[in-house]
Image 1 (cartoon, rainbow, N blue to C red):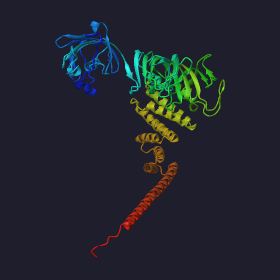
Image 2: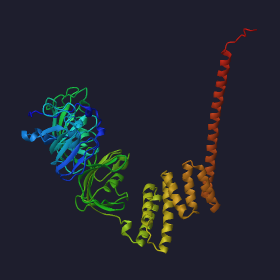
Image 3: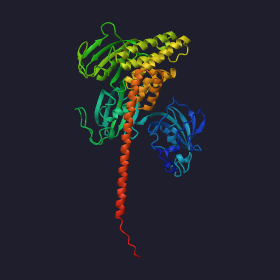
Image 4: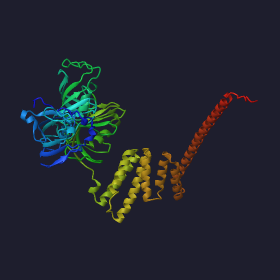
Length: 575
């Protein structure tokens, strides 16, 4: 055979078959075993096992050695005889279908014998002069290697070929800060931009959209070649050179970009509104994190946006010590430190809502202006966690629950309802699920549960979390169905949720139990006023509907009359 022999796609009915006809069957074989691939007649016999578990996918550039024979054993081609491996893109129609379907089941280093029916080979026409029409072929194939090529955006706009595999499994997220090296070239090889090291936030991007989209698919240390279409480069407008070292990118130009992800700093969203962000500079040890009421020791430095240091603690002598969730530091720092491991170093960005708010705030080394976003460099030296319930005996749990309840009471009286609510929840968590309490302890536990859930319901009413208030009161009523406070507070929540019928049921029941309860009577008057208001609104609403319906009927009637008057008189010709 000629040295430039390439496998053409077959020109028969197999070309028109949808890829769905070829299931992703990857038979598990032992050496010497043979099995079909799909239901097309294609067979695979394993001659030598490969490495690992990965197999190439569509678009990947594979490198193989092969020997092709007819069923009678006569050889028609061999890359081994030529001494040069054969390379092609898998699943792109560059070879016969039997190859595309068979080779994607192979692992690196694997050797297999494929028996390929004529429908997946050269069909009725064959490949003269060596392959006759309707020939079933056999190929001994060894998969030497492959380069992964991924269609990143699934629209052909960015193809990524992995040149060097990265480490681990993690990949950057939108909020992370990546450090990359790259060079970008036009299709003629002209370098238009190059950087030996540049850092940027993934979602903000750099140079062109392809960089940020591609880097999110890469592992640390990975090197890749990107083939970028204009829509992910600079589109119809192109880009003038930004520096003397760069070159213009013409309109509608495609780019080839060599990209290396050197490293990245993980940025995590401490709060759901993204107003407190933590950038990890150095990973911590283990997996444990501080909990509420943990005592932490840190080194910290607080800065304004212009770099002015307004606080510095824990560097001179002993580390700075504080207790989490005790308002000893600003809220954003409190929340961020709870996400840090021992030994971790991070930069925390805190917007005003979680920092010093809208007012000017004098600090240790400088004044923080109102509405300032602040930045803290924090090192978690060590922490001692608040004791968890599973570490306590029954009496310790009861005492811990009482302590949390008292803390909640103090916070509630100070108007700090959210923090008070967390204390009551923690108190209940200590005692909720333990079945080993004695009978005497169970009585104390029941009283505590009722008290904490009632107090927490009061917090939720203040926080306008009315649905949660209903749930907490219902829990109390499951324990004590005659709890006037639970009925009263649930009625308050129902009123705010406009469930007036349910509110009335609770208030009436509360008054049956305690007819002289002043608070319940007041709430009943409020409820009656609400009902009257709703009835007035309903009456007005339906009155308006009826008025509109009446007007529509009048218009309809007038139209019918007008239509009747417009009908010409018919004269009886027989008269």
